[in-house]
View 1 (tube, rainbow, N blue to C red):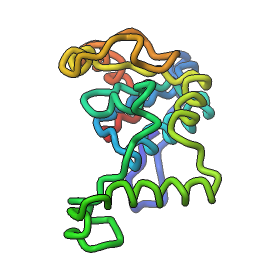
View 2 (view 1 turned 180 degrees about the vertical axis):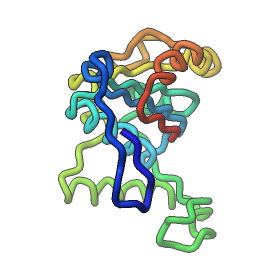
View 3 (view 1 turned 180 degrees about the horizontal axis):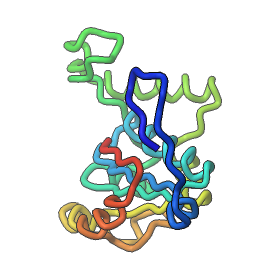
Length: 174
């Protein structure tokens, strides 16, 4: 099927047998380990898995904190340098503001029944999302395989993840 944005008509072609049986694929690269950056890859991957998509998330650098057993329960909101924060940027430099913003965000999430990161991660893994920790980043930070939540795939190289991503219908870098 081809379509042009902004036009009403589109051209349809019959998919061949291989296309009709192939599952849609989502590839996500998660690079950030803060509370606000943990939710997008987990929520998107969970929804795609529920739709029957084949999904993998490659956690690299600080993104590894999202799948780290101890660190994923202590993720914080970075207030300094975050232009979307509803406070002047200089306020983020005040000692204790990161902790306060994190506490307020967690409170708001609880009030709105937003699951914590570790629970959302568990749901994603249970739904079939493949969770790949970056081997290079594991070495840089000195982590061990047992530092990560159950259900993570073995350490993965970026070249291996690219093999998965090359056939993805959607690839996201967050």
